[in-house]
Length: 216
Image 1 (cartoon, helix red, strand yellow):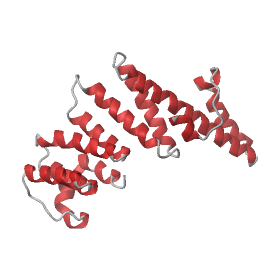
Image 2 (cartoon, helix red, strand yellow):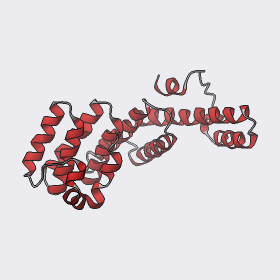
Image 3 (cartoon, rainbow, N blue to C red):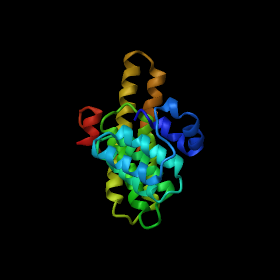
């Protein structure tokens, strides 16, 4: 997670960065064949050192951006981070795979994995409202694009739970503003919820924490 910003630089200027800042980044090896980096990644995953595996992936992508090994390694690291419940990094690798390698036959699956990874990340925190909003938007795009996909029910469930979360967060914020006498601010959040389908439904939300509402 601490490396997300670092990895986002890959597509912009990774080759220059790697060659010019190797000593600063702690990478002491360079100018190796693709098979060398591949083996290093696999070995690091085997020993549960995903930080090292991420660094070796960066080296592989920097030195061999057209290597056929990158496709497999991108998926391997996505799954490794997912298994380690580092879901934001898993989402990053799934997104990389989608942009570079996914085709019409498997696009729906990897788009689903991206949404699912973001949702799993939200299981460990309910403070990132931006990620909630982005994941809802991704889920809506999925449902519009892949109407016949077998993953539609799962994505619909994710979207519904996150919409409920967004509603509850707004309610909590409005209540807080009311308690401190900021009625105008509270009204803004109440109005946001009035535009939600939840406000017009017969759904009764149980009195539990936001995290329990989402994931039970």
